Image (cartoon, rainbow, N blue to C red; front, side, top):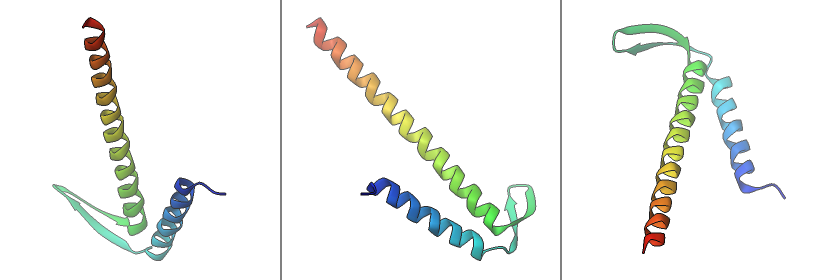
Length: 80
């Protein structure tokens, strides 16, 4: 049986590929003082990659804070 996480990842990948293949149009991207033309699929993929990067940074920070808190609690328990 295929794990649920892998199934969701494959479904997400298929939806992303459909978005990419269905949007080959060139669009203008304006960001602050920067203006450039990109194909829409490049913007979709770039946004997805930035979202994944942000999620990884956030989850690693939360995991690190939990470990730090657990270590502090263990240290406090040993002292008493």
